[in-house]
Length: 121
Image (tube, rainbow, N blue to C red; front, side, top):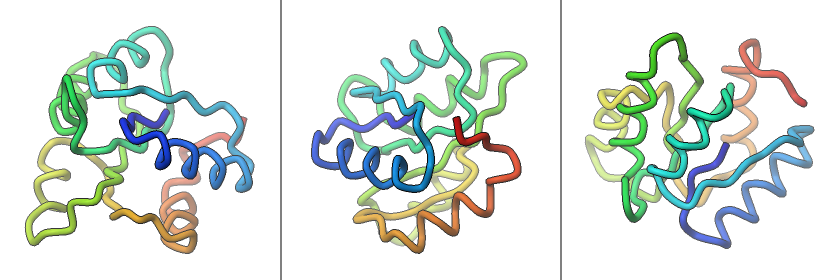
């Protein structure tokens, strides 16, 4: 799942993931929608934008982490590239962090790093 409020970023991320073999990709417009979708269906991997309307990615991650019996891989994918942003994302419960604009080699490295936990269906 890709919680992301920017249409261009949504399309770009879906296109790149499709080319890498990932087909079942859901979009959420904000953190609240991401949490609701997650409660309806388990997602193994979530590329979570941090700054979104309604509910930001940090709050959404904390709420998803509080759902008993679930531990998806949540990767911050954000334009925030300031000192301390990575640590803030990890403290919120995210597993990893990549900055936007996402570069293909970085995305591939993250998928390889977490790949043993992810299915490409």
